[in-house]
Amino acid sequence: MPNKIAIAITGASGSIYAKLLLEKLLRAKEQWQALDVVMSNNAKDVWKTELGNDDYGKYPVRYFDKFDFMAPFASGSAKYNIVIIVPCSMGTLGRIAGGISDDLITRAADVALKERRKLILVVRDTPYNLVHIRNMETVTLAGGIICPATPSFYSRPTNIEDVAATVVDRVLDLAGIAVDTYRWNEGQQQ
Image (cartoon, rainbow, N blue to C red; front, side, top):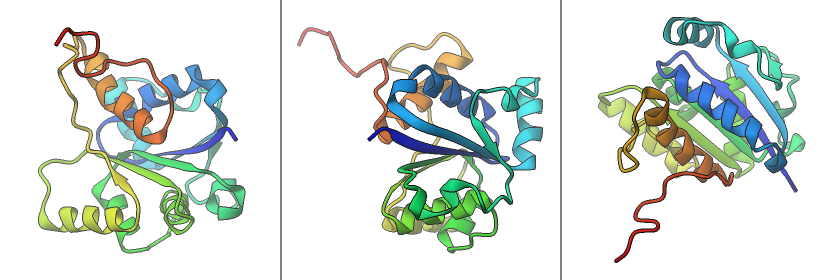
């Protein structure tokens, strides 16, 4: 069965990650049957600041308001098997770790955890304090995946989008979406 994916975008810095993730998922349409997006108001402001546009609403996906609890991925019966929060603010992480489903973003995460489905949090803040680390531990123990927005440089990226793509490609790998990307030591003679 093709994937049903919910993307949540919070107000943490790192809008480029959300942008690239949406673009790459749209190029991999054969690997999903539903792709839905929910954004916080802060996420929209940060996107405008960081990317210099308001293109976040122009992708051919279904958008849901942050407080629309009638969205399909707000219920386990809709069988969304992947929830990705990118970037994930530490406030959102804390609410998820505390089991507080006060908006559609945290509800989607709660549903993914309770249904034992894939939840990937692309945390962006740095450095971490002990509260952040304990919240990451709690979400990990509950079955979530913490994927810090930490780029790699093995592929020798040459621009900011290439750098950010190293994180996005990792997220896609974690989600089980096939992606053509640099693989460590692939094609090199031993």
